[in-house]
Image (cartoon, protein in one colour):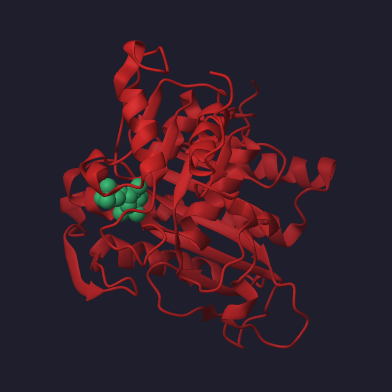
Length: 339
Ligand code: P6P
């Protein structure tokens, strides 16, 4: 495959496919540049005095890591002046960040989890940035939180960056999934995968097993059957992986298949799940579907869900089509598809 840069790829998509209007191209290039900047801070670790807690809390009531705050600021500062955005929303900010009047306002809304997997920052395990792009669809002047409350199927683009052994950027604008790898010598994002595809079947599941006693019956049934292996109803052995960084787990699934589950559990029964719909589940669901996978909340397609709050949470089951459909059928209590 010819190795081209992110800019060349976006220009080609814009010129040849009309898939990426200029303001969206500027948005994606700006986010990609911000991710390079975040990668530099992440890679410094102790040398950059960026590890540990920031001694502040975010809207979720979680203690923020220094790098959470740094990554959030980098994304805000990189995107606020370009004229491509009307506003931004982040896991790390209670309310939306409207582009100030001193800058032109654009038609796009950018949402992000600036640094997903924070519990892994201080122990040098892969973390990442997740982003989602919506269009401002109401014509009224100004922008409010309500403008963000659109179902995930309305996304114009979605992507994530993994700060891991390689620094990789995965992106979809609704025309398949591409991957870029950061060439640190030139500072360029280089196209390394033109069409990521998730195998329909897998032998690998990703879930936090320590919550097993808290799960609902359909999830317990599914995982018990995986654990029963060859001697059980699935008649094959399964493997388990859990990085506790959604970006890393999803990237593995995009790369070799698998099923990722963060289901509702009875620890906090009033919450539908742990992960956030707008800037974790929706972008990942868009990417997974564009790569031939499936993403549900156990019962419904995630991209069809109509959000009611910016920071609302959701159960997530995503990855290899046949496995996600099986988990979903157990929730809907239908007979699972033939093995
Ligand atoms: P647990 C990271 O904090 C995160 O939001 C996701 O990236 C990850 O999949 C999940 O939470 C891990 O949760 O309960 O296993 O620590």
